[in-house]
Image (cartoon, rainbow, N blue to C red; front, side, top):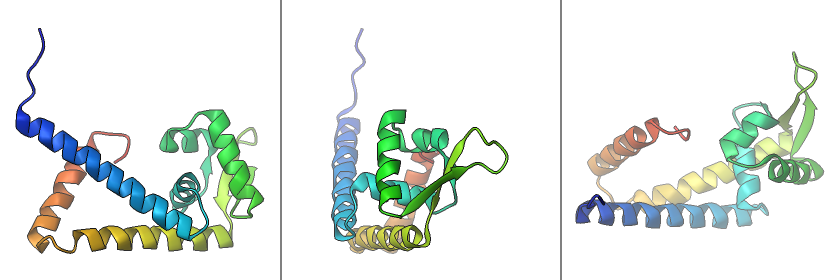
Length: 145
């Protein structure tokens, strides 16, 4: 037995997919302005909150170990991050932003935020507030919260 999905839900799902594509395009455009790939920008932005281990980075970025290692290698080669031993567990490695990496992460994050804010500018403030609350609620039950 198949479940019939209401037309309004199908249309909303389609809008969310298109919104996801729009956000990905903004992310890619701003990343390119800073000579980064979107994946490098995402890694730098994740590290803005502090050093993370490779397994935590893999979980947050949803990347396999080999893909993550290559990504980290590339930002380390550019002197945007360093690999170092964990303070308490010498068997694990932590990735930390360099000063240059932190500056680039902040510039990229600010650019993405500004572009997205521009897209929202035509919405009345009450709609932006409601949209923010609804998206926060939607994301609360996911690993992306």
